[in-house]
Amino acid sequence: MKRHLFTVRLKIRGPILIQSSSPADFGLDAAVMRRESDGIVCVPGTLIQGKLAEALKENQLGRSLPLSPAEHERLFGKDSGVGSGNEPLRRRLMFDDLIKVSVEGESGNPLLSRIAMDSTLGSAEGRMLRALETPFGAGATVTFEGNLWFVGPEGKRDEVKRLLRLGLRWLTTIGSQRSTGMGRLIEADIEESNLIELAAADNSIESGGGCDRLELSLRPLGPFCVSRPKIGDNLFESESHLPGNVLAGALVETWAALCDIRPGSRVSDCGKADPERSKLAEHFDRIRFRHAFPAAPGGVRTTAVPLSLAQAGERIFDLSLENQPCLLDAGGEDFVSPAFQPDWKPSTWSKIGSQIGFVEPHRELRVRTAIDSNLRISHRGDDTGGGKLFALELVHPWRRGADDQVEPLVWRTSIDLGQIPETDRRAVAEQLASLLPHLSYVGKTKVPCEVTGSGRAASSGATEVGETAVLMLDTPALLADPRFQSVEGVRESGALSAGEMWLLYRDAWSDLSGGSLELIHHFARQRLRGGNHLALRRQAQRRYVPWLLTDAGSVFTFAVRDAVEAAARL
Image 1: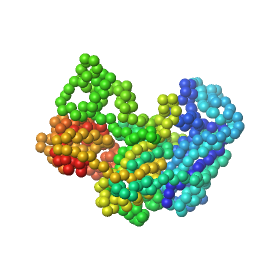
Image 2 (image 1 turned 120 degrees about the vertical axis):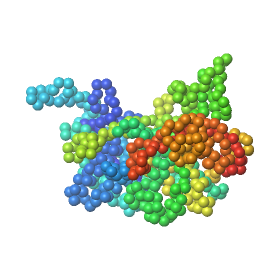
Image 3 (image 1 turned 180 degrees about the vertical axis):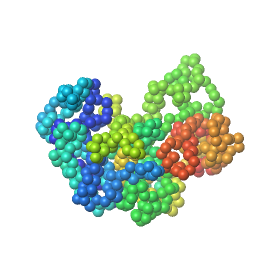
Image 4 (image 1 turned 45 degrees about the vertical axis):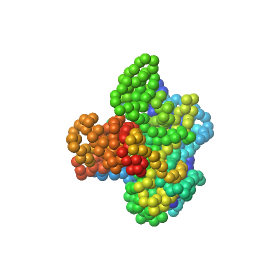
């Protein structure tokens, strides 16, 4: 069982128009799609995915291919139907963009003009002139290459390769304006590449001192999209980090693929199909996956910006240890009120980001649509709703440096095993580490990742009674909610005052610390998290109630009341 890498090679005769969804230059109606990092012409992997799925379905309907509908859905996925509770059937195949690697023949005129004709008059129709970018001339042969991944047992490799080769050779044209002779496919092939396996994390686990967590570096092998709460029906904006629940879900999906069981299977199903990882299945719910944040290859894992930071003039202050409101020295003899995050200007954010090592990856917006196989045009909708046009914001695993050079990034995270009994902890760590190098299916693009890391023993900080302890949330937390707490003087529903939130936080932290920490004050921000997806997927058949989350960056200051218990809890 492993992750198989294939190289897809297409030879297309020009002219070619693989249309980009990005805004074109002024006066250009249709621009060719190019790779964001270097501007090389490319064919999006999603286009090849869709055309392959359609080609194999046509062969399947013609009974020339022994491919069942269930197997087709397993390879290419299936849309969540109405009333399904947004339960997906994820595809097993992962497609990268195909990049131009060579051109044989003349480049031709980079622009091609077209105009619509008036069918009545037989003349050019007014204001219908279009300018198309065509970097490859008529007769030129352009070779595109790209990667395709498949996760599964060795026995499935040759079968999948045969199906994909058949589907590719069934295609006749690629791109736009096919009916006019553009984008003719003259050769297609697929070969298995030698997948270079990185050192597995279990080989780096220290044999002594226990293994309470795994410190990991992830490198996505393509752009990803982890959607934020939607503000529109067809726009998916992406987070720049990889949430822990996304990593956990992707790992289980990878595990199911390695075992060749149905996509979306539970951990218990994976454990039954893979007895060698039985301890991992038994204790999976006790594992804590932390968020993965972007960093430079030699950098450290970044954190959220503390809400206790305040600006005064050109100076930045941390007020986490200030018990009372105060004025800040802005320089010279000026003392001003502190300015917190809602009042910061872009220059302040840039300054803070450089100090804490904050990294912002490159982003790209791609617009996609489904194609109606019968009409050969974009899907215009059916009885259940409108069309299927949507936009994905993609996060690339690199950023632009100061000199506009591409700088690769990694995402750093850790996996906490502290809740697993010590007798099974090392076995779970080894089984988990053997699975991590295959990590795939991350985010909406189902991108695979390269994973490296090592095991570490947990460390605890020593504290003394009466000392002050400061804690910051690195990720959002379901920490204080009147529905789950019974606190005198706090309403069970409705808008809560600052005083009521303080009572809820004091109660929550007292419970979490076993009474060893007493809340003094806090700098916290809350938000409601809900939406259509959570309502259908997580709260189906129940009254819809959004969750009250405490934001990342919230800071809490405590007085230590029990040093031994506090050290154990921290």
